[in-house]
Length: 308
Image (cartoon, rainbow, N blue to C red; front, side, top):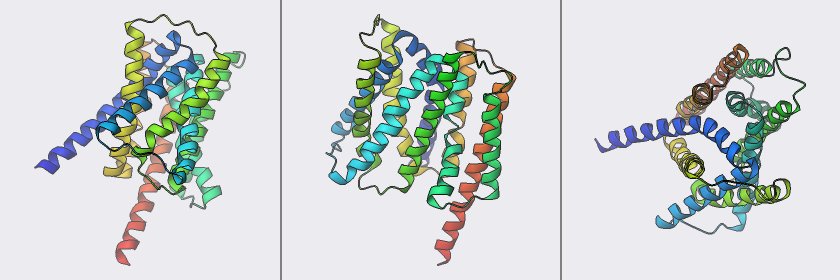
């Protein structure tokens, strides 16, 4: 009975994190209207890092990283934490929420060809279909006939978001193929701290003397983004990824950009174009194909190990 309750609570935590991550897109859009994007990214990284440090300290699990942990701390701290969050916030400042969420969550589309070309992974027919669907979705997202090519801010924002997606893809590949000498949770606060350093430097240089009018809404937004989205979100994702099947997690996380798109339409009155809906459907269909292919490959490897 206890095991069943724990399993139920885990799925409830998973649903909560997906909802939190989905709603983080319109919340972040509002946040970068109050606080300059790089300072907003800095606040998110620092708050999330301090919260995880405190959590591990209370649990008596806080450890100093060793020299062999530094490659993962630096690479993931910069790519997945610092550079990624900075690019997302600046890109979000110039584009719509639904547009931004779909671009960023197209990350697995870049992981697949990189894994095939650089790490010798097999490109199965299902993965190829998923990749083609995803590329078609990106084409719809940057619809040449509807995209405002004369708006330099929209082009800049979309380019930064695409670059953020590639940074996240690079971080995924590092996480998958690098050797871990410590648990992901123990390294997380140090990665957030390392990621904050270049963002702080960039904010001081590119956004000096930020004018921020502090009020309750800003404090609530920073709590939501720093504590719930970053600290709770990363911790919960680590717990879920270790416990639930890969297929379950990869497919369920696809609900986050859908929630982001719907919530931005409801709360921010952003227009929901046919091109955006088609892009979302095609990219999610592509990601489902990739996830199915990965699951089949995992089961095949598991059966071979069992047979041997």
